[in-house]
Length: 158
Image (cartoon, rainbow, N blue to C red; front, side, top):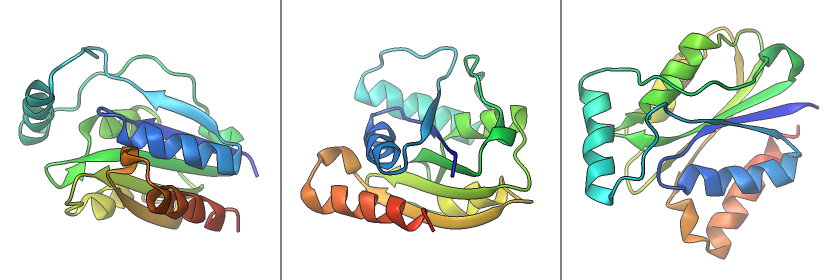
């Protein structure tokens, strides 16, 4: 099964989880990056992300190479911002429609997933969602977190 793993990661949590998933599924990694990707301090990242969510703006993203038609499974992973999936994923999905595919979604958060999974799944109408997960602070890199991520990825193999 040819698998794509599309992620956006601001603080590294989703990137950490994606590395584990990628190695379990031998997936192609497509990393979404905003055009204004900058080194921001923790407080600045918080205000920037919050501003994106509350203004309901979709930030422009850098060019990427991704053709959904060549994949059997597409996994999308994003951080949670203000109880919702990070805004760059909405930009990505508005530019790259995905329909009729097996999909799976995951979110990474520091203590509250809010309605992020439901919102993320609503962006993927017309697809078959075969899995969803939320990971609490995966970049803390402990054995239990790593096992949870690996177990979830292995369930997607079918």
